[in-house]
Amino acid sequence: MEAVIRTTHLTKRYGTQKAVDNLQMNVYQGQIYGFLGQNGAGKTTTIRMLLGLIQPTEGQIEIFGESLLKNKKEILRRTGSIVEFSGFYENLTARENLHINTRLRGIHKQNAVEEVLEIVGLQDETKKTVGKYSLGMKQRLGIARAILHHPELLILDEPTNGLDPIGIKEIRRLIKALAEERKITILVSSHILSEIEQLADHIGVIHQGKLLEEISFEELHRRNRKYLEFQVSNDNKATMLLEKDWGIYDYEVHDGGHIRVYSHFGEQAKLNRFFVERGLEVSKIRMSEDRLEDYFVKRIGGGTIG
Image (tube, rainbow, N blue to C red):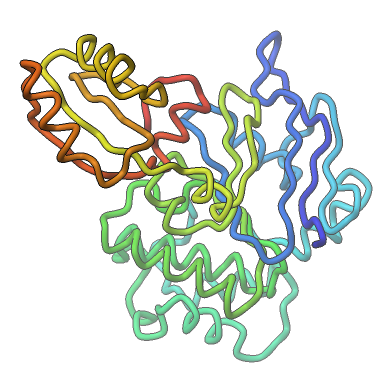
């Protein structure tokens, strides 16, 4: 599979602080690559380097197999992007705004504006000025502008940030359609775990400027393990009994008396009776699997989730 984006030892320093530290990123053709990290982890700095908006302190960037430093103009001609909020002339309509961009980009294709407005679902909103658009509509218009020139690569920095649930759903649907129907490779950054989980087929986890891991969701789900979870009144006593009487050592203890047992599936009733007979209160039993949030917390060594 061909790498559309490849970075080698990519580093960006501001003074003595490393905003991005030795990043080794690989985004392959046809992927929706979720660039996942907390706010301030280095996502936007990385994206700005990929788009040539700022220069790396060290390292190399290759896009479409070419050096960004040496072939920036040609690479960006094949790339669309949204970085931070999309600015428009709010006293003009969507069509008028996009026609300005066709002239700036030298796009001469007839109906280019009508085509992208239909793709993003704004074809019936063209009489309204952009100042009257909702935030979600503005973001869809931003994507329309980003794909006016039919890019092969689309880079989106936090495209659902600040949107309501309906707006998030619309952007998610649009990104999937662009990847599936238009065959655009897409890099999308977010700190919202649930969005990346529903959208991307591969993820890269960045924390404090370092790329901790790249993994496909297929592999992530394969790694995820089923478990039985018990909430008990005394987790120390419960784990001692599990080891002594059941020979169970493959478990985890979580806050609030939660114990996850990674074996003995189908025996939750027996384990429950065992705990109760030995004087423990069991307030909850469930069977579940690790989620992306569990994976993310483990990779960054704890901390809060955006």
